[in-house]
Length: 118
Image (tube, rainbow, N blue to C red; front, side, top):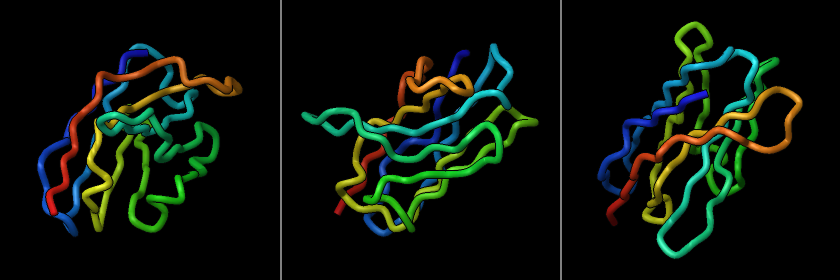
């Protein structure tokens, strides 16, 4: 599976942004999809995930209520709608995929940079 993220840019605090991830090379509807991020000098952290089966979603506490993950299986796309952005949301955002029933995310995109100015 190949993943390509887009949509990252500089945005002011309090603003909104939608990240997109285009998937190819696999049966998209059979994969859980996730978003992760890595801030400068920090490790990669989980942001949100959406299940292959029922599109159930999970979120990190730090983004719950502000971010929304969604998927379009017909278009092989996954999205991350980000509202009420904070400077601490500044990071390189990665899209990831794991085949159903697999614990580890095995497929990763190259990342898209989100910078939130105060």
